[in-house]
Amino acid sequence: MIATITMPRLLYIGGGAVAETTTALARLSASRPLIVTDQFMASSGILARLTDRLHAAGIAWQVFADTVPDPTTEVVKAGVARLKEGDFDCLIALGGGSPIDTAKAMSVLAANGGEMRDYKVPNEIPKPGLPLIAIPTTAGTGSEVTRFTVITDSERDEKMLIMGLACCPAAAIVDYELTLSMPWRLTADTGIDSLTHAIEAYVSRKASPFTDGVARAAMGLIAKNIRSACREPDNRAAREAMMLGATKAGMAFSNASVCLVHGMSRPIGAFFHVPHGLSNAMLLPEITAFSAPAALDRYADCARAMGLVPEGEGNQSAVARLLDELRALNDELKVPTPKAYGIAEERYMELLPVMASQALASGSPGNNPRVPNADEIVALYKRVYD
Ligand code: NAD
Image 1 (spheres, rainbow, N blue to C red):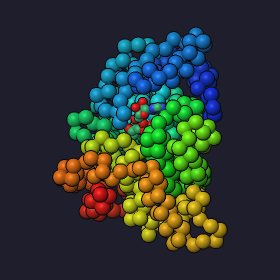
Image 2: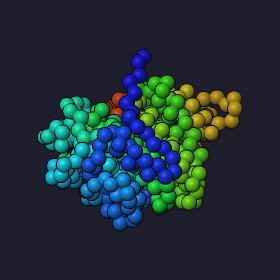
Image 3: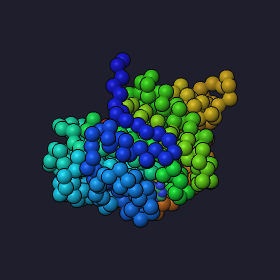
Image 4: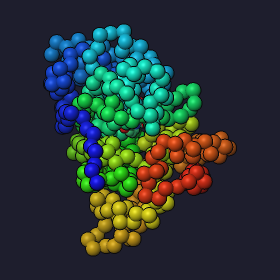
C-alpha cells in the first residue's frame, strides 16, 4: 500500500513560536497578510502578540475578526468580500479551529468562486487559493495541519466537510503558550476532540504505518496530560504535551481520515449547536463499544498507547480498559448526554433519519472498522441520548 501524506510545508513548534510568523512569511515570500481571527483573540491581547511582531518587522496587515464558533457560509462570504477589498498575498489564521477553518474556506472560495457547498466532499476543489499560515490557540482540532475545513451551510443546517490540498495550510505555528488562557470546559472539549482524532485515525480503514506512529504518540500525550491541563491551567508541561498531541493527532487523521464518531458528531453540532469536541465526547465511548469487536487488536493498541494496559495483558481486557477509561474521562470532564445538554427529546428523535443520512453522506462512517447502516446509526444516536 502506498500512503499519500499531506502536510504544511513549514512547521514551527514550541513555546514562543508565534514570534516566528515573520520568518514564515519571508520563507513563503508573502508580505501582505489578512489576519482571520475572532473577537476574543482581538480583545484578549492574543492578537496583539502577533501584530506586535508584524509591526516590528514592518509588515502591514489587516484584520477580519468576525469569525464565529462553528463557522457558517455567511461568515465565509463576509470574509471573502473582505479579502477581495485589499491587495493581500496570504492569510494568517489565529484562533481555534473555527478561525482556521474560516480562513481555509475563504482562500478556497476566493480562488474558485461559486458557493461553499460546491466543494463539499466528494467534490474536488479545482484551484488552490492564497497560502495560509495557521496559528492554533486551542489544543485542539489539529486544523493547522489538516486538509479539511468544516463549514456549516446556514440554509440547510448541515456541517459540510470540504477536503483537498487547497485546504492544507502552507505553514503552521504551534505555540502552546497561546493555549494557557483556555478555560476548563474548552480545555476538556478540545482535548477530547484531539483524543478522538487520534483514536479514529488509528482504527480507520485508511490508516498507514505513518499515521499509526503519530496517532499512537498523540494518544499517549493526550491521555497522560488531559486531566492535568484541565485541573491546572498554568501547567506548562501539560499544555505543551496537549498542544503537541493535538497537532500530531491532526497529522494522523488528516491522512487516515476520521470515522463514525466524527460522522455522527457533525449533525449534532449543526442542528443543536453543541461544540465540536463536546459532541465527539458524547459519542466516543458508545461508538467505541459498537466498533471495537470489528478491530479488537487496533483498539487494544489504543489502550496500550494511552498507558492503560499492564505488560502482557491480552486484547479483550485491554479494550475493556479503554472503554472504562473513556467513560471515566467523560464523567470527570463532566461531559453531558445530549439530554442533559438540553436537547429536546422530540426534536432529537424527529431529526434522527436526517442526521443519519448526513452522517453517511460525509463518508466518515465508511472508514470505520464496523461500517453501520442508517438504522444502526439511528439506534446509536438513541443509545447516547440519555
Ligand atoms: P473554536 O475555534 O470554535 O473556539 C471556541 C471558543 O474558544 C471561541 O469563543 C474562542 O474565542 C475561544 N478560544 C479559542 N482559543 C482560546 C484561548 N486560547 N483562550 C480562551 N478562549 C479561547 O474552538 P475549536 O474547538 O478549536 O474549533 C472548533 C471548530 O473546528 C469546529 O467548527 C469544528 O468543526 C472544527 N474542526 C475542524 C477540523 C479540521 O480539520 N479542519 C478538525 C476538527 C474540528
